Image 1 (cartoon, rainbow, N blue to C red):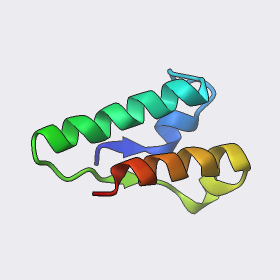
Image 2: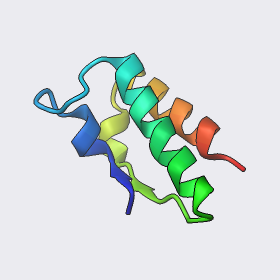
Image 3: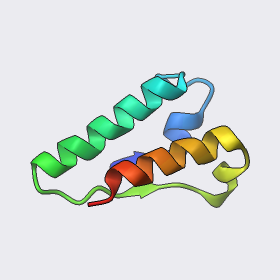
Image 4: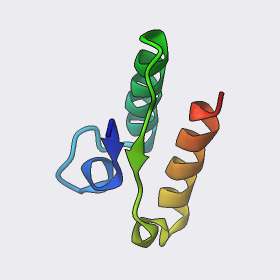
Amino acid sequence: LVAMDVSFLSPHSSPSSHEARVHVLRGLVDATRRVDGCFSFLWHNSELDNAAKRRLFNELTDHARP
């Protein structure tokens, strides 16, 4: 498991801005690709309850696609 929604969506987590979260998540995807790894993440359905969270999820899955 490389990333989990709760780690990125908590109000106490760092980074806290949408752009910074996208940057970190894309970096994790890219680092996983560089070592020919398998990027896996956990995103709970309950964390798709608003547009901002869905946008982050969609940006992550778009970037993670081969």
